[in-house]
Amino acid sequence: MTTLKFPKIAPAIAISSVLALGIAAPAAAETTVNPHSVAVHIEHVGNQRMLSERMAKYFCFARSGIDPMKSVQRLSSAIDTFDTIHVALIEGDDDLEIFAETSPQVKQAWDNVDLMWASTRTYYDKALSGTLVTDQDFDRLNKLTLELDKRVNDMVTQTRAVYATVLGEGGIGEAHLLDLYNRQLMLSQKVAKEVCLVQSGYKPGDEEKELAETIALFENSLAAFQEGFPIGGVPKPPTPAIKDQLAVANEKWQQVRLTASTVASGNAVGLSELAEFVEGTEVFLEEMAEAVHLLAEFEAGTNSGS
Image (cartoon, rainbow, N blue to C red):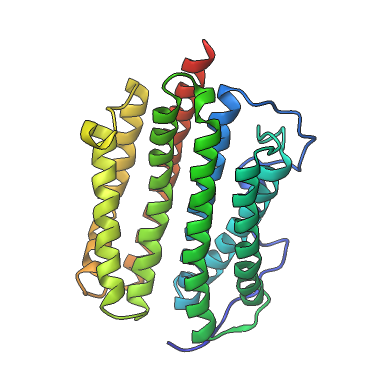
């Protein structure tokens, strides 16, 4: 792989995820811990895993020359969103319905994420400033992403452990299900990132195997959500609306899965096909995010007596 200078985007051109996701400026943290805010909280923490993979995905696509301007814009957007949520998860934000963190174990997990995010952010800032991205930088960022994923996942685990019981008698199981649904968002970004890594020739052989395993986990999980997998602790969709939304998400995945499978088998695909794959995964992300939101609303509403 050769070095690549990212197209530099001016602030006026860069997509602001804060606006795209309807996130306003931080508000005074008065949100309290209740079934609704806990469901929202778990949803936000889980989304940080997705954003970690999303940033790495668009870093790779920009470096590979796959619609580089849009890739850099989306990378910048994901960075903004990760930053906004990261701060809100410790300080609280009423507009995001995130309460200020008080749990010592969750705070420690947040500190661990904060340290790794600072290191990871350095490489993104370097690339977005227009500085040449070397092979060494690219490799280092991929390794940092793996560690960031681990630390964010630990924060997800700690958050579930501390707050799940607020969701009611079935809180632990319900928080776990919400986490599993949310993980699917991360896996969609991970699949796309690994498609890019394979196409880029990054660690030949190893990445193809990793991609095949990620696709299998992704598809098995999606099937379990739709059909239920009791032995794995996954019930059938709790409402018709969630069931229908999962079916929509699955339909969007089926439209792009061939590209991922082709790359995983060691065969190359064209730039236009890759671009279509990227946009298809964006559509899946939106539809699956709606399923996650519907589940969060159901769990919060059920346990608040509404």
